[in-house]
Image (cartoon, rainbow, N blue to C red; front, side):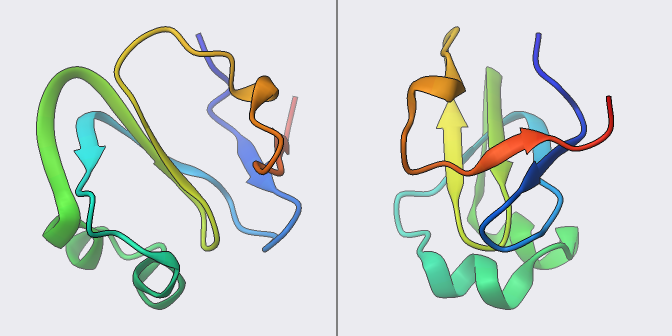
Length: 83
């Protein structure tokens, strides 16, 4: 399980999550900076993958396909935003 109210302390954006998707490898900082949080624009670089989850804020993104502790990733500045 993961918090569904994650917030990024670097860009002050809510972290969006998308079940059964991963991010295309061509994603970069400017793509998210220019397109968050508009789902219709983000879909251009989303790939369907059953059991995976794509996370993104305006400055960071991750595709997770197996159980992963996101707290161990030092560069992520995502914290629980509401609980």
